[in-house]
Structure formats: structure tokens, C-alpha cells
Image (cartoon, rainbow, N blue to C red; front, side):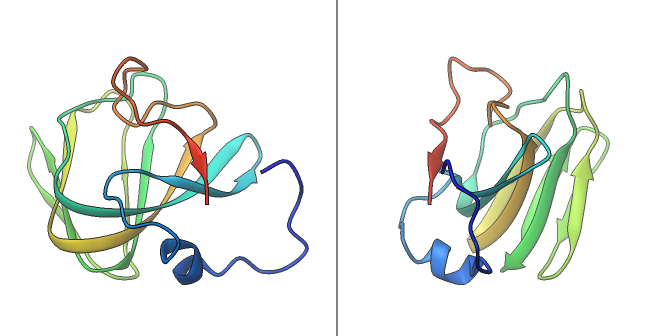
Length: 121
């Protein structure tokens, strides 16, 4: 995604272009951050980001963000930011669609060795 789109980005249409869960797709860039959509279902791995917060906006469905201090339920139209350095584990009982905003190059597992490859939608 090297060029600036000259039209609105339809997130639902972007989400229709791939079936995989936990494989974020970059749909835009903003001040050094990747704007990504992702489908989630089931449990992700416990992880943390030492250098950046983790932004989750639920577009469809519901997720639970498990943290050692307690769980946070996030539904459609709601967002939650996990503070940097806080261990967490996103979980979705049913498929959910999210918008994620992360500093470009941030590994989704907090570890480059286990992170999903960044792909454009």
C-alpha cells in the first residue's frame, strides 16, 4: 500500500476479501501507524507490547480482552486501549471484526519471531 487512497475506505468490504482469523490486513496508514482490519475467533496468545499501547475498536461482534488485573468486554462501536507493557489475551467466542491501530512494524504477538506477517488488504 504505497499510495494514498483518494476515496473512502469501506472496512466491511476490506473484511470480505479474506477468511483467516487473527491475520490483520493494513487498509491505511496514519502518522506512522498502520490502520488494520482483522477477523478474530477463539483465543489469541497471551502477550504484551513493551513499547506501545494496543488499540482495539470492535466493528462487529464482541471480544473479551483478558488481563491479569481483570477482563474487559468490548462490543460493537466500543474501543479499548491496552496500556503498553500490560499482558493481555483477546478472545472472541464468535467471529468478531476489529479495527486495530498500531505503530508501523509492531508485531501482533509482541515478539517478531511469532508475529503474523503484515499484509495489505
